[in-house]
Length: 94
Image (cartoon, rainbow, N blue to C red):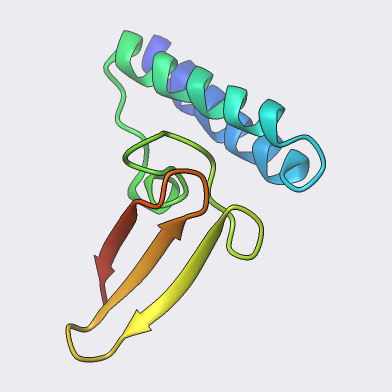
């Protein structure tokens, strides 16, 4: 029961962060911090589709054009998300 509530809250925090990015980036980053804490406390993993929206280094919310740059690497067949805050590059295969 608690895990279902935790999953719903994580989803809700990501929705709120999406609305705040570009206007109040600090608030969006705070939502990501809360989502991570909920996930760790309740031992609920963040879904893979949403996990790609968090920088793996500084844990900031990533939205292309605002807080990260996206590049396709056709040689290695992956998508690269470069965080504008810390410069970290996360790579996901396609």
